[in-house]
Image (tube, rainbow, N blue to C red; front, side, top):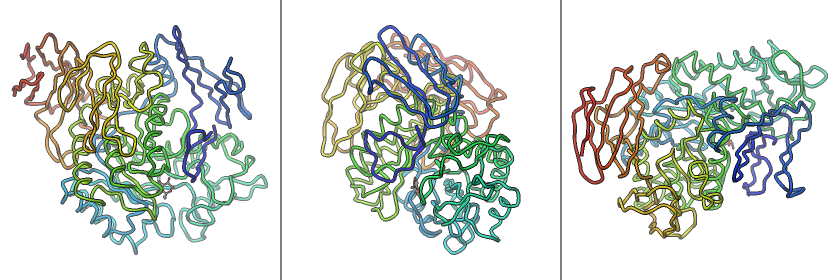
Amino acid sequence: MWNSDIPDPHYESMRSLYKSMPFVIVHREKVDYGIFFDNHHRTQFDLGKENTGYYSFSADDGNLDYYLISGDSIKDVVSGYTYLTGTTPLPQLWTLGYQQCRWSYENRDELISVAKNMRDNEIPCDVLYCDIDYMDNFKVFTWGEKQYPRHKEMIDLLARNGFKVVTIIDPGVKKEKGYQVYDEGIRNDFFVHNADGSVYENVVWPGDSVFPDFGRRAVRNWWADNLRVMTADGVAGIWNDMNEPASFRGEIPQDIVFCDEERRTTHGEMHNVYGSLMSKATYEGIKRQTGRRPFVITRACYSGAQKYTTGWTGDNQSHWSHLRYSIAQMCSLGLSGMAFIGSDVGGFGSNCTPELLCRWTQLGCFTPLFRNHAAKGTRHQEPWAFDRKTLEICRKYIRLRYRLIPYIYDCFHETESTGLPVFRPLVLEFQKDNNVLEINDQFMVGQWLMVAPVVDQGRVSRDVYLPKGCNWYDFHTGEKFPGGTRILREAPLDTCPIYVREGAVIPMWPVMNYVGEKKVDCLELVVYGGDGEYLHYQDNGVDFAYRDGEYNIYRFVSRRGCLSVEQIKSGYSERYERFKINLSGKLFNVKFTGRKLNAIR
Ligand code: GLC
C-alpha cells in the first residue's frame, strides 16, 4: 500500500492506487474477523500468494500496531473497524444530487452554458465543477480573471438556478516570489524540506512547486484560512486532488523531511496520510467558515479519512472493464469505511461512447457520489453530448436518482451510527448464502435495493442472482421472485435491472431539477409486500443542528398487507403533511397531523 497516481489505464493486478486502507476482512464459515494494520509507511499484504496456507502483512518501517476486530458477522467487523477509525458524517442533501465535471470547463461562458443545457434539457443537476484551468496559472487559491472574470457574480447566478460550484485545490504551491500563498508559506516555514533544511521542490501543474507540510496543525490552519477565498465567494465544496502527493519529476524521495505535528519525520512515514491530512484541513476550514457540513472530495487518503471527506476512484478510463471494476472498488472502499464514494461516470481518460455513457449513468444513479467527469482532449460526455436517445436514458436515471435521494439519505443516516456503507457487496447482506461470495457485478444500496447493472458492451439482457432468505420484487414491473434463484432479465439500453427486497418501504421524492427546488411536504412510500419495518430520517439537510436533536424519525411498519406510519422522534419543525402510499399497487393519499396512522390497507 503506497498511495500512487498512475496515469496508465488501471488494470486488475495493479498493486497500488490512490488510497491506502491497510484493513482486511476474513470471512470463513464459522468466523468473521478483520485486521487493521495501523501503519502508514509502505505496507504489504500477501493474501495467499507466497503460500496458499497463510496470509501475511508487513511494513517497511514503523510499529507492528494492529487491531484484530472480531464479530458475529461481516457487518459487525465493519462496524468495529469504523468504531475505531470513524464513520462518515451525514452530508448536505444537495451533495447527493447529480454532479457534472470536466477537465476543464475552460471559462465562465462554457460553465454557464453547461448549466443552461442542464435546465433546458430538464436534466436534474446540483453541482458544477471548476477543474484546474479556472486558476491563474494553476496557482491555488486564485481565480484566473481572463477565463473566469467576475467569478462571484457567476457563482451567484448559478446559485439562483440551483447550482453549487465546487473548485479543485491541489497541494502543490507554485514557486513564485510575489505570489501570496508561496510567500506566506516560505515566511512561516510551512513547506516540506530537504535533509539540509532547504525547501523541497518538485513539479506539478504549476511547474516548480513546493508542498505544504499538512502533518502540522499550524500548516493545516493556514491552509484552512486560505480557503476563505473560495467559501467567501460562495464556493460550496472543495475537490482535493494530486494529494498522494503526485509529482511529475519523479517520486518524492523517502527521506524528504515531513512532520507529524511537531515531530520531524520522513516522507516515507507521512506519504500515505498526506491526502487525509489535507482533507482534514479542508474539512475544518469549510466547517469553521460556513457552519455547514463540509463537502470535500479527495483522491488520496488513508483509513479514517471518511470522517472528513468523500472520495472518488481516480483516473479511470472510458473502458467497459473499468465500469465493471468500479463496482468492486466501491464495495471495497465501503467495507473500508469510505461510505461516500463514486467513480467518474462515463470514464475519465479515452473517449466515451453513447452506450457506455448510458450504462455508466445507470450505475452512477446508485453510487453515493454521482459525478460525470472526463479528461482534457477526450470527447465530451455530458448527457446531451451524443444523441436524443442517450440524453433520454441519462435523464431517466438521473431523475430516478432524485426520486431515491430520501432513501439514500436514510442510508447515510445509518452509516453515521453503524459505519455500514451505502454501496454494499451482496456478501455484506447475505453472508450465509455461498452463491453471493464471488458476485462483483451486482450490489446492494443499503439493505433494501439490489442493482444488477449491465457492464458489458452490446448486452441487452443479463443473468441476475436473487439471494436466499427473502422474496424479491422487480423494481420496474413489480413482478415477484423467490430468493435463491437465478433469472435472465431483459435489459435493453434504457433498462437497468433493479430489485427490491420483500418487506421494503422505500421513501421517494418527486422529481426535481435540484435539491430544494420543491418543498417536500408529501413523501411517497412504495411498499413491497411481506413484513418489514423501515426508519426514515428527516432534518434540514444542511448544517449540524441535527446533532442537537433537530431531526425527525418516522417508523413505517408493513404487516400482512397493512402499513402503519408513526413519527417516533420529533425535533425538526418541518414535518411531512401528507404521505402518498403505493401499497403493492393500491394507491392512498393520506393526511398526516403527527398522530399515528394505523392499518392503512
Ligand atoms: C488529475 C485528476 C483529474 C483531474 C486532473 C486535472 O488527473 O485525477 O480528475 O481532472 O488531474 O486537474
